[in-house]
Structures are given as C-alpha cells and as structure tokens.
Length: 194
Image (cartoon, rainbow, N blue to C red):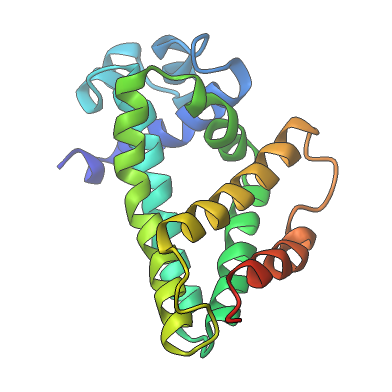
C-alpha cells in the first residue's frame, strides 16, 4: 500500500506547502518534489498525477479531521457540547496549519469538476459526523424534531467553512478559535427545539 511507504507522508506534507504557497495551478510536480526533497520521478511512484496528489492530501487530512472529531465528541453528553467541540476542533486544526487552511479553503475550490466530485466523496464521512450530532440532539429533545437534517448540516458546515474562508482571506490576522463560541451559539439557536 502506497500510504505506508516512507516518502508518502513526506510528499503529502510538501504538497500542502507547495500548493498553499504557489497556488494549485502553479504548484508543478517539480515544486512539490523539491519541497519534499525527492526527485520528480519519485512522486510518480506514489501518485498518478498532480490531481491525485491533491485528492490524496484531502483524503489524508480529512481522515485525520474525522478521526479527531469522533474522538473529541465521544465523551460529550449533550448535542450542544458535541457541536461546540466539533466547531472548536475544526477551527483549531485549520488555525494550527495555515498552509492546509489555504489549500482547503481556496485552492481546492479552483479545481476541475471531476476533482471536486472526488473531494465531495471524501467530505461525506465528515458530514456524517454532523448528521450524527443532529440526530443525537433530536433524540435528546435538544434539537427540533422536525429539523431538516440535510439543511441543518449544510447550515452548520457552511457556516464553519465560510468563517474559516473569511479568516484565510483576511491573512489569518485574528484568532479563529475564539470565534467558536459565537458560531456555536448562532447554530444552536437555529437547531433548537421549539
């Protein structure tokens, strides 16, 4: 399996930096190879193309995101607590890796339609975590029984996503994580049982 080969993670990490600093379209495989400290040809032992690198970056990082998310929400007893730690975790991971934030918020969106479709597939697991929190909240009567889960998920993910995008566009000049309680409060009121 490619993922277990020694240089795979090195190339993934280098790709995040190269794409963030140069933009997806200007981040040639040679720039990624140079950032990783490997020969250009080595890249092709692990990846079929630059698109494959971008999808792999997203798959690896989103896998970590989901794993971390499940871990931090597992110990929480209410849907409100789960939602808060999910938002905090989302903001924390991206605020601690500015290159990843640039790639996820700006560069992934400039990719072609096929690439976006693959990225949406990877994103589904993350969105299932959001759905689980919403259903948990409904069972506990914290969230409206008639809540449209799909719409609520879009509202939650869209709000977090736009908050991070605005932070990236503003050159990360303020503390993203400090916004989590306000975002949480807004979202909670939108989902609350009536």
